[in-house]
Image (cartoon, rainbow, N blue to C red; front, side):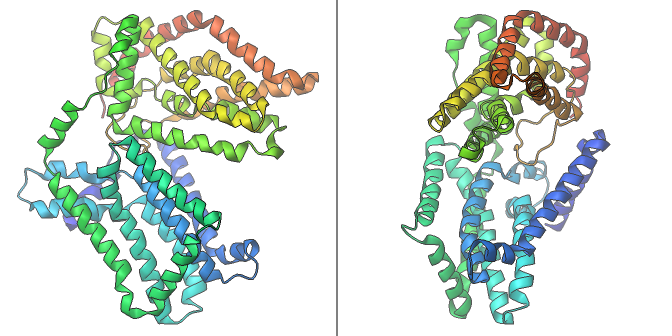
Amino acid sequence: MYKLLTHQWKEKIRSSFWQKNIILNIVLGILGLYLILNFIAVSFFADKILLDVFKDCDVIESFTRLLFYYLLFDLIARFFFQQLPTISIQPYLTLPIKKSTLIHYPIIKSVFSFFNLLAILLILPFFIKNIYLTQSFQFSLLWIVTVLSLIAGNNFLNFSLKKYFSRQALISLLFLSFVGLLIYLDIAKIISISEYFSAAIFYLVNTTTFIFVPALFAVISYYWAYTILKNNAYIEDSQKLTIKKSNGFSFLNNYGEIGQLIGVELKMILRNKRPRSLLYISGLFVLYGFMFYKNENLDNYIILSLSGLLLPAMFSTNYGQFLFSWESSFFDSYLTNKISHFNYIKSKHIFFSISSSIGFLLVLPYALISSKIAFINAAFLLYNIGISSIIMMFFCTFNTSYIDLGKSQFMNYQGTGITQFLVILPIIGFPILIYYLHIILGILPFYFYTIAVTGLIGIALNKYFLELIVSRFNYRKYKMAVGFRQK
């Protein structure tokens, strides 16, 4: 087992991804360090934060109550974002290694996941400062063992949830609805579930007889995950399932070559893990509208602009940054087959426009807060279709990094380069420039009308812009193909 884990560590540090862009590695390292320090700071000062929010509260009890919410959000985040390392055992299947060892390996490997690191950073500083240094050794030991057992149980339980829920969208929605219902019942104080949770933790900690219960939860979760992996550890079975399951978009064939290319794009998204998880993540980001569309922000042009630009186009923008890289594993087929490059580029523009329009419809209910939200989002929808899509497609002709579609989106920077950062500057910078020009000219009330007109101009000149991108694509396509072949 130790050798398997060391192999995985060597695979990570020797990956060609970390050797391609030193500047990007430095930026990611700084961002990671910044995130870690923020989590440590929040945990260390949690007692002061809790006393400010909940006056004269018992800090340990309040923190334990908040763990109820943390464990629920942790379980949801793991379900959508945590990549299960089951595929990593395939190279060892032909070697003289016990099958049980290979099945234990991905489960044990998941212990070193990013989510568990965050849990430790959020809990350990608070534990040392407010429990270990103020409470008895027995209380401190039993409290940390109980909490870590629950986190470990969440980690192992994720294997089971992925197996039974991930392939059924309806079940996943019911699961999220159930978690949301629990949170609502607690916040509305219909049933104080967090209080019962905190009381149960303190009962277990103060009654050593039942301290085995949290540990038993972790053990059962581990055994369940092991059983699931053992029953599904045959490559040929997963291949048969993949072949049988297909998504048909035959109606798109009625729209000629462009419709067929859009159908291929849709199948690629729905059949592969990374673009599919990006689709789920983008759907969750729609809920950020509750944070942006507050009464105090309804007259803030900057906030309304950013929310109108980004929220409806969350998926199309994130997906569009890797527009050609998504097809890196089969990009050569587009070059060797008799496919019109203009139709190829136009199909991507149409796909971008459709996904942005669907995003607009998803955030349309926010217009119930204020009717101006619908108008602003419509103006930026035109801007995204006419301007943002063209800018993004042009920058994507510089993409040369391979993307493995089978990997998860979360904490996955494969294919990321300086292009993905540069493309954001003109997309966001252009509306900001228009905004300040309207302030200088004293015509700020006409700002959103100008955004809409700019988008309409881009749509009117669509064919001309697409021809320029096709020309650029023809110039760059062989360099892109060479880069995509370097896995």
